[in-house]
Amino acid sequence: MISSEKIPNNVDLAGDRRLQRALERWQPRFMDWWKEMGPEGFQDAHKVYLRTAISADTDGWAHFEYVRMPEYRWGIFLSEPEKDRKIGFGDMLGKNAWPEVPGEFRNPLRRLIVTQGDTEPASVEQQRLLGSSCPSLYDLRNLFQVNVEEGRHLWAMVYLLHSYFGRDGRDEGDALLERRSGNADKPRILSTFNEPVINWLDFFMFTMFTDRDGKFQLLALAESAFDALSRTTRFMLTEEAHHMFVGETGIARIVERTCQIMNERKGVAEDVREMGGIDLPTIQKHLNLWFSLSLDLFGGEVSSNAASYFANGLKGRVYERKYNEHRAIDDVYVVDRFDNGKLGNEEVPYRNALNEVHRDSYIVDCEKGVVRWNRVLEKYGLSDRLYLPHRRFNRSTGLYSGIEFDPQGNMLSDAEWKKKRDEWLPSAEDKRYINSLQSEPIFEPGKMANWIAPPRKGINGKPIDFEYVRVEE
Ligand SMILES: [Fe+2]
Ligand SMILES: [Fe+2]
Image 1: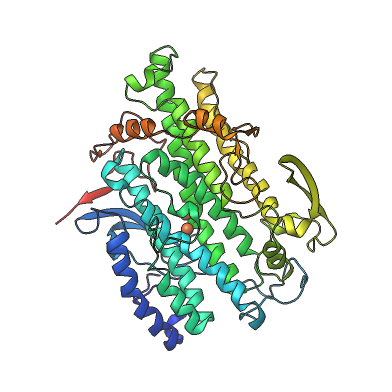
Image 2: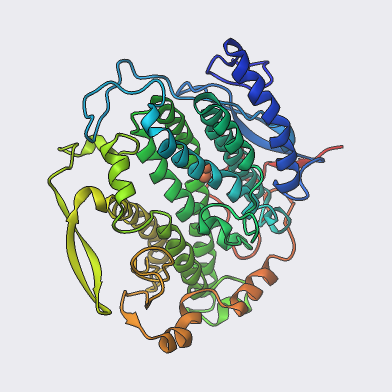
């Protein structure tokens, strides 16, 4: 069913005139933001082969067609309600889920929703210049698919703010359109979402690692006792899966092309750049950067906020059902700690260590992607391997911030760090090199930039040389 309403939805917006009017007032502000901060240079003449969410049914929600991005139908879709849903964790385990926001949890819930919501437009802002250096039409289309869906995720959070948080919620909805990624005066809330995404290696690492943080946050919120939040985030997760696919396969294709170049040159790494490819050390440095920036997003190792979110049913654990015990009140967790500058560890109440628990399962998930990238290296008979740096490496929140570690997790002096930094993180020279590779976009259907292999298959059964983005007057 394609809804003819102004705002496509499965929440019976027409039945709530007040809410509908509020969202219809927000809509033109969103459009102004999109035109100002959305993909630059692709707003008017370009039609993009995009999928649009038109319902939340498992086998009918993805509808593909050519659309101009500003005409994309951003809608509000929640997963189907679960009948008699109960709270699955924390102090209120087994009680009924909440159809409304309880007064005592209004502030923390609003904060959780705003923080999640803020990342969505932020990533669109971070990626807005990438179209003009795309390695293929296939990749250009995937970038824009990610962008419009992040826009829809913003809609999802604004829907919750408008429906459940009254005047405060509407103000927050406006503020979400006012902050700007990387702007010193009005930055986005989380520091990782103020970092520039300047090239496609950044973009693929971002969708691999930073969107995966999004997956973990959404999974934790999907457990929430606040039922509308749970249903909204469950539907967002179906879109998020594609974003991580874009990142993981994007890097796999770069690695593959690099392998081909290395084999042509019999494995002499220095030659990869001479032949216009991206050498493995440069890939590893970008991996190090975006993995460590994404680890920061989980918050401090020991956190009383995390404990109270869990105790009160606001935010659960990822795949809560997989745990045997859902109160987690008596357990302890071992975390690192510094004693007079020396690294040791300590036991803390499990609930207070939940950020670290989430970080652990995130790392396991990331590791699987790295294993798949290394299979490509293996397939080409190369002995080089990519790896995840230690969680202590390059952190700017929590226990390890302000102290330097190498990618194996060994503590370094400032002088040692300064000497080695450019071996582990992208240097100014690396950035110049990648930018020189990506100075011209590739718009010819089926053609790939020299530094990336073609994908295995196209989108929605279309061939790889399909015209995924076309110019139309
Ligand atoms: Fe998102
Ligand atoms: Fe995403």
